[in-house]
Image (tube, rainbow, N blue to C red; front, side, top):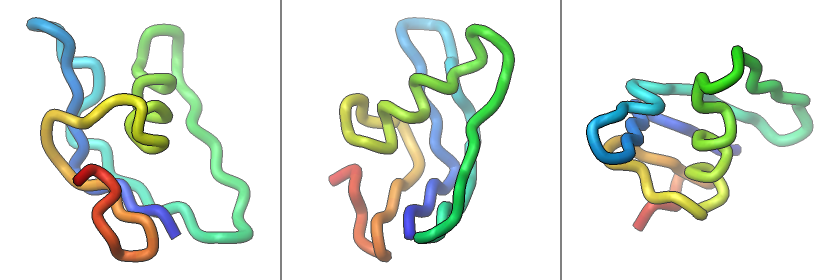
Length: 67
């Protein structure tokens, strides 16, 4: 299970994602949808560890993935 809790990511003065919270359970199909420029790719890159969130937590089976 992956838990995203209150994640925020910004670049310079532009806040790209703010206060995003979600739970993705094993065996479920999860979608991240939104308009162009809404931060979908930035959120995915935070989840897989390519970007570090400015604040919040990303947990994988209860362990902090952002550390």
